[in-house]
Image (cartoon, helix red, strand yellow):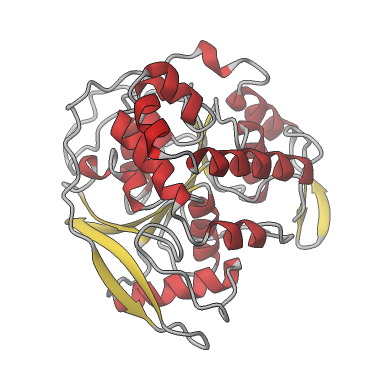
Length: 364
């Protein structure tokens, strides 16, 4: 994959050739990413416990038959009504990673959360089926067909964000919201991310007799998940223990990690598809400087900086993530939404019904 030598280098590969992006665009990205300012200086609003109701549970399974591949089964949940939105989790995670956000979406969107192959309750793909991105995109395309989804909106986090972007390139997504998408790293950054993920996987193998007591204290939650969340001490103890258990039990973890070493995970643009990319300023796995490469490769993408958020913003600021999803999946897109946005608080403007006057200033 073509990468930039630094986050603010105004050059990128397009169509196999090198061109230089404009100086003003580079400066916009510099300001948006906050330069080298420490993310810890920006506080994230704490959502009071109990303020967000738990998502309704009800796992289902769908069998899909991708063309030229073995049949596969995927676990999913489907709630709400409105435009269909598919939520894809990251490496070592599961569909429940979206639980803080789902209740904030179901009144306005039909929400489908899935366990990717080999994660959560979805079985691994057969040994004869590779775990590379083209295969996963083909499998999810078949899942969409089996679920009666015609080019749904797709939201993905980390690995799921990269898959969402590739689905859009395959004309399988109506719009894309990618939270800290993987694949925009250079080789050194990839090695670093893999080392952090490998360490997290080892941490997940700790017995429950150690994990559960640690998760019940703020200091313990920081020790267990400090690389994942911007405010790990605020995460519910049960959520911390469950996320580590999901990573420990993820049968597809190693194979998916190996597939991520492939070059050219993402190339080119996504013309004609609305794309929003949001990144936490305190992401310790995929640092926000990688967003500059995404902005250069996808010139039409809207970039949202999440002050103080870590690698998993769904836990750090679910209200903002929900608002980004609602705004990013609005058809047609709002043409007044600026390309580079950095919310100054954890509450963005609520979605206005058609015809309602706009009396709330936009946070930028």
